[in-house]
Length: 420
Length: 148
Image 1 (spheres, helix red, strand yellow):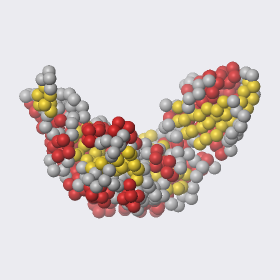
Image 2 (cartoon, helix red, strand yellow):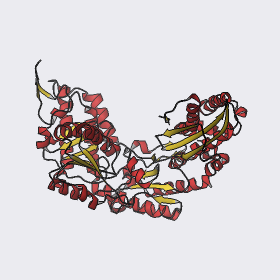
Image 3 (cartoon, rainbow over the protein chains, first blue to last red):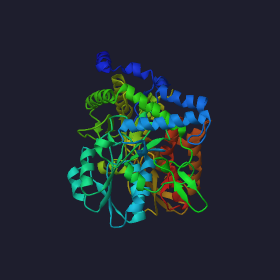
Image 4 (cartoon, rainbow over the protein chains, first blue to last red):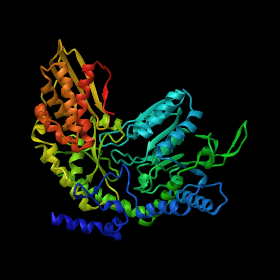
């Protein structure tokens, strides 16, 4: 055990990346659960917030809480400035062309619904087809099912293989000139599979289809360049990127957003309202009806600053090391079966234990302070494919350590002891 | 801090590994499904009544150790009981795993081993799924029972 931890310590400090120093930035990590140090491995559900994000929100509410885009007073000007400068940070973070392409929404879910309703409902008919995949989170399934019911458009699914990878040859087969929308996750939340989105986008464009990428699971692990990807829409949530809940981003190509009608009506999305009609505001405000989540946007801006400071390349490196180490340790447990063994995957370890239901695994681990997710991960079609009701999922972030992987493995071994 | 063994007692582990009354009753007069969307626990309850008594009862499906053991123990306890006694037991069991002050565990027999569940609020639904399903079967509700 000691030998293992020594190796872990060395690994945690390679390439000038000091995980112990980074952990000090996250106040929540330093507590005990059930008398044991918290080991937070549920990062695919939501990530923890660095102090700088928490402080930015407090600073706003203590110092310059005010409504934006309308007041002439100083507080309102400061709030507007902070809100709009966060939009610039988001634009740079995903390398969009313009802040007109960055719409603030409640989260990835709302962004997908916005595109389905504002873009899809107005352009699709019963002759058309939508392609999604078996790997999707429910948030990237249900809005398209609704759209399919509303327009009569046919919904098709790209199947997966036993490793939890999309079968590209099948995608090519179902793609055709009737395909109008392709919606696919960048990274699977249930299995961690990194999908070949660049190729999928290019292929879809050959048929004139528009592509939405659900990046909810991606932005905290890998850098995203929407210009290079050439996707038509890219969506993500702030809370999975070390920012607050209730804030998310819709990126859309300017010419597409320009043509799309507003998703919701209200204040701030108008230029002029008369009793007869309304002139809509310019992009991106056309899609931001009502007083927005100002503190959320400011918090998201601070989260992006923080991620940039650590560096996504360092984050990717450390997380990949954690995943390799976890895979290696887990493969020594005979009762453990990996679910999702894609060649390209992020730091998610989804597994089942012979004869032990994931829910029991979750309870036993929690008793030792370890937080993992157990269940279907809002991806029931994935569970259906593997013919299991649920998995246990440990998802790592850059603030996790090799020593925490050891605690997890010890916890998994304990599960077998409880049941035998 | 709770000892995990208080929850996963030997009887529970045993009933999970070798569930009693597991399978179909071909001439059941009531078959009703229970579903816990949170963890995907699914069970089907088969009930055969004679007059006002439970002549036979069984279940099948899949679920966590708590839900399987609970269904196993419940079906064991229900055999030969009158419908009225079954309803009384339903109420007592519910008290057992939700009442902080505790209840008279003697009246519950083996079922009392599930008392540890009350320290794990997220798991109460696992233990009660089969009971709610039985309750629906008795009261004539035909829809799938959901814990949500």
